Amino acid sequence: MTVSQELLDLIVCPDCHGSLVLADDSSQLTCQKCGLVYPVRDGIPVLLVDEARRD
Image (tube, rainbow, N blue to C red; front, side, top):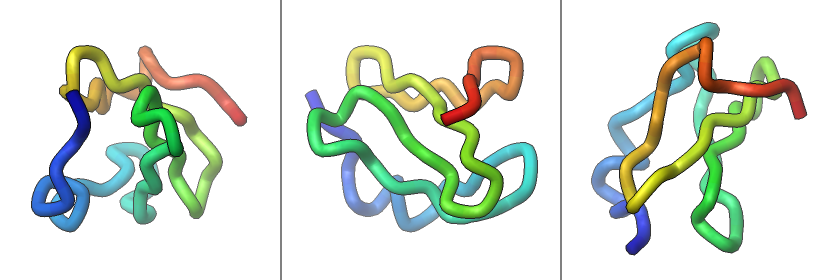
C-alpha cells in the first residue's frame, strides 16, 4: 500500500512545515527542510515528531 499523491500534496512536516518526500519503497517520508524522517505504516504516514528520526 502506498501514500496517495493527493495526500502528499496536503501534508507537511509537523515540526517545521517543510515539504515531505516519499521514499522509493514508500516506507518513509523525509522533510526537505529539517531532515526529519517519518515512518509510513500500512500506507498511513505517522506524522508524530516523537516517532520521527533524524536522517
